[in-house]
Length: 353
Length: 221
Image (cartoon, rainbow over all chains, first blue to last red; front, top):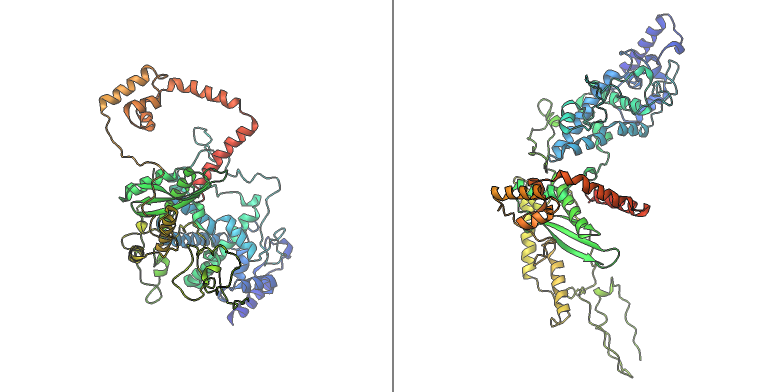
């Protein structure tokens, strides 16, 4: 009941100061949020908690390229939201799949809350973008300054990677150590200090909006609501982790793994075959360690089937998931709010061959 | 005189025994007898029933094998009990094969049905490995390694990796660890380049595709 009064007070406040035409403002004023049908519809469509006011929802839609004023754009909210999304995703992945290799972890992280995914989420939520930001625009539209057509957006970091010796390192391959130390939550080292005034792409603006919304939900409604929002919109997306693996030498890696863990050396055995002398033979090969089968693969040659079987065995090692998992954020909170903390499994690391 | 058989709801020919229940009728000339029921016919269940025999598919990689489960995991005990039960069932199970066990084909069929019934048990006796497993010998001594290096340096054209591996009974990979011959590498590379130059468009594409296919083996299993 307090919100309409507050909104009316805000509206009254704006009428008191000398009127500025809306067209002169860089972004829609806060008072316009209450009268926007699009904004209310978005609030209802996402089942956002009623404690999140429409004014904040309107603010999450304003990218810094539209309004450079840090009190009115979504930059600060997006920063908070980015950290929250990264935290929840990382703890989910690490607790449920403790053996994931680092590269796969980064890929999975990107698949859940990376830029492309967040842009897709924005589209699915039905958020439309304004052609050009401005005070007269409906506050329910995503406001950002578009990048000029023909601008090279791939090499945004060009020229910045030159070292003091003048060597261009932009083409150098990044090692995992470098990615761990100075990369972001996806292990990417990007020049994030891009010039917002020059305009951004729709993907960048959508990404910032979703992050800002998560940050806003956290600030207004607390951690429980944020976790619920995160679970229903991001964790619910289906991702097959087994497709993210790429082994270069699966058979060698599997031998190293068996040697490390003290299992018998893996042996490939032919399980069944058909059409050995035909144009399209199929061999089914199982990889055994002692009497236990580790993996199975089918291929058009014995070598292919053996390699695929070793890759499948490695995947089933890496994709081990404990039965009952308590992620750190579940145990937060006082008294009966948080669950009892049960330590997660920590694996000794991936196979290095 | 002919009798109509009662229409029975039967799921699959294998599940009904109506063929043997047919009354004998006077045959004007001798007919060939009906073939016996096939090996997969169920002879233990008297009524009609559903045969559950799903097509085989690759095991799910999310189902961690017993060996890969940590010691603390409770699923370990469950899997172990399941495995033991399957082994016990396989040991006591005697398939009722309609074939006489005189012919080798019949005995092979009988053993096949037995292994199908036992479930996840490894093929018994274990099928031979695709590649012969070998034990590493670690038999070369420093003077032998020195000799290997000397031979390779003296005449790299004669003492190739293959010949050295044969002589010292080690793998070619090990020879490459011990000694290299960079002086003939450029020569060999040029030779290979010459050969590749003679390839046509089709052959080149086929080779490139083969490399790509091989890379995909480690990606999707």
